[in-house]
Length: 291
Image 1 (tube, rainbow, N blue to C red):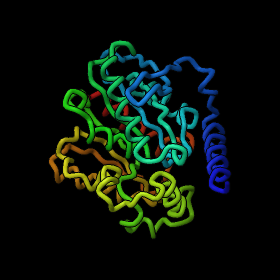
Image 2 (cartoon, rainbow, N blue to C red):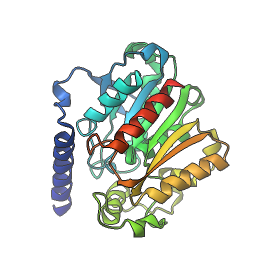
Image 3 (cartoon, rainbow, N blue to C red):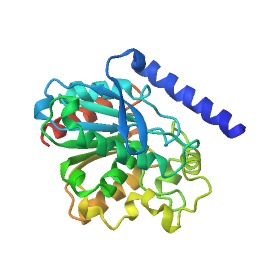
Image 4 (tube, one colour):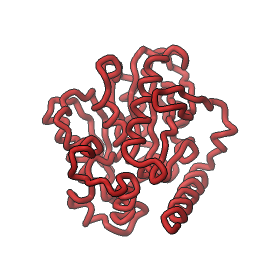
């Protein structure tokens, strides 16, 4: 009962704060709503049509929120901004959330959605035939997991990964920023631990069955496409974001990286148009145009 109440409060607060920061309209009254028929069942999505879509890859966007509290509304303004800045068409995916749907549901949903979008790419309007997997925080995690699990045809179509302060490992293997940034910003270390507990439930983070939830532990990093990644200075996930960038480079993956030392987690997607947000959006737009 307490868990259900906590989840409901966090979701409401996150949705309200994102709409207030962006003055965002209701996503459900905006054109672009669709349903994806996937092997995981029907999943909702929202399509943002880009002005230069024929020259760009399709951007498949997985929202953040710790696998628990994000949705199409919390990232509506950001997805529209990314579409406008890059000229690419963006398709945001509404994967199922924990704790109602624990690991590996979100990962399975995102892989199924990416496969369905790839197979029906022409149905969503023009593109250059490729896709970019993008996401923030838990969405960055899901982008990595999707790329690592993709079959050959989908893997070849993925032209890049756009990773905004991604989650890559469990809190039982904490990086120094879990201590340095434990408190004092919106995402605290305690909240991040609660997200992981809500997502994994009672599953052991060291068991063989859960290892695909931790991209940095993968032996297949060399199969990943080029990536652009950012980290924030005041973020419990700061150091693991830097660690996955280094690990991908060591595996031979081309990684472009930006660090915003004065910003905190969520600066890029749900806190409104700060100067660091604008700088990261420009970098992402330019990078997408090169895919």
